[in-house]
Image 1 (cartoon, rainbow, N blue to C red):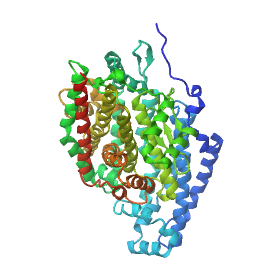
Image 2: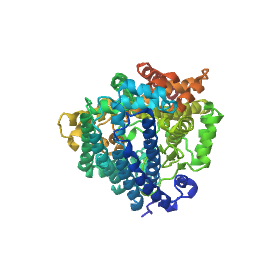
Image 3: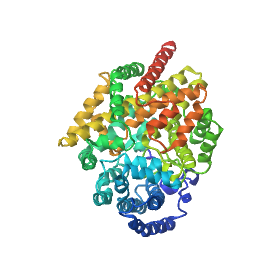
Image 4: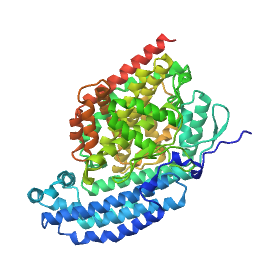
Length: 604
C-alpha cells in the first residue's frame, strides 16, 4: 500500500507563504482589547438618536461617530475571519469569527437609527445642510446612497430589531461554511502516478484538469458521493438562507429579493435580464465548443468530468509560485510601472496566503478593510489556472489599494458589480500576453482552450448559476418547498440546456448546487458574467494601446463609491445599460473558438 499524501497542518506552512495579519493587530491580545474598546464606544451613538434633522453640525458629528465605529469593526472582523479561514478547524479562531459577527450585529443595532433618520430628513432640508457646511458636503454621495432607499426603510425601532438579528439571518450560511470546509470528509483518490491522495476541494480542481480520464472520473464520483450523503442538510441550509433573503426584501417593501439585492448597487434589474437573455441567445456557441471538446478528446461520450482537462494536455503550462509571480509582472506591464509597483509590494510584504493546508478555506479571494492591506487567500497548485487566479485576485487587491489611497473612508470601498471588472480585466490582459509570447502551436492551443474554458466558466456557467439562483428565490417566494430533489431536478435540466445534448447527463452533476458557496451571497454570481464581458472591452483597449485607455481604467480603479457603479463604468468607457458589451464579449469568444479550430486542424 502506498502512503497517503496529506496536506500540511497550518504550523507546517513556511511563514513566507502566509499572510502577515500582525499588520492588522500585533497579536490576539490586541484584537481582544479592540473588541472591548469598540463595545464601550457603541453607547456614543445614543445622544444622536432622534436629532439628525436638528442641524448640519449634529448630522456631521453623528456621521463621523458612526463611520469611525464601522471602520474599527471592519478591522476586527477581517482579522477574525481571516484567522479562521486559514484553519477553519481551529476552535479559537472560529470563536473569534463568531464573536466578530456578534459584535457586528450589536453595532448594527446601535446604528440602525441612522439611515431611517437620514431618509426621513426632508429632501430640501438635507440639501440645505449640505450647502451650508463644507465638511458635511464631502459626504454628499454617501447620503445619496442612503436616500435612494426611500420607501424601503422601516422605522428606527424596526430596523434595530432586524439589525440585531443579522447573525441569525446568516446562521445558515455559517453552517454551510463549517460543514463544507471543516466537517465534510472526502475519500482518498489516486493521482496520475497511482499515489493515494486525500481529496479536498483544491485537489479536486487539480484532478479535473488531469489528462488521465480515470483520475478525473474517480475524483468526480468520490467528491459527489460525499455531497450526496448530506444533500438534505445542504438543501436545508440553502432553503433557509433564501427564505431569509425573501423575508428581508418583503418587509422592506421590495417586489422581490432580486430587486432588493440589485438596488444596493443601484443596478437596474434589466441588466440581469439582459445578461440571461443574451447568454441564452448565444448558447449555440457553447454547444459548438462542447462538441469540439468531445471530438478532440476522442471519447465516445463526453461527461462532466471531461470539461476542464486541457484539450492538448501534453502541452500544459505549469508554474510554481515563484515563476507565476514573474509571469504576472510581465503580463500586467501594459498597466504601467505604478500598477506593477503595487503588485511587487504584495509579493514582497506577505499580502498573500499561498499554500493549501488542512482546514484552510477552499478557493481564493481578495479581502481586507480600509485600514489593512488588501490580502489575498490562495490554495496554490502549480498550473495555469492558478496563474489566472493570482492575477484575478491581484486585480481585486490593486483595485482596493488604489481606491483606499485615493478616496476618504466613506468612499473607500466599491460594489461587487465593479469589483469583478477589475479582476477579469487582469485575466484578459494575461491571455493577451500569453498569446503574444507563446509561438508553439500546442501551447497556443492550450492557452486558447484555457481562455474558452474560462469564458465558459465565467460567462456561461455563472449565468447558469444566476438562473438557478433566481429560480430558487422565486420558488420560495411562491411558497414552493426547496427540497434536495426539487433543486436537483431543476439544476439537472438547466445544466443540460446550457451544455447541450453532446454532454452526458451525469446524475452527480444534479447535486452541483449543494457545493456552490456563492448561492449564499444574495444575487452575487451574475456580476462575474457582466464583469468579464465589460472587462473584455477595457482590456482590449489597454492591450491595443488605445490613447487614454490606461488612464481611464485607473480612474475607474480609484473611484470607489464616489459615484454610482453604472456611472463609474461609463467614465471608463463602457455603458453597461446596453447589450453591446455582451455582444462584443461573445464575438471575442467566437473569434478564439475559430482560431482554436483552425490551429488544431492545421496540426492534426
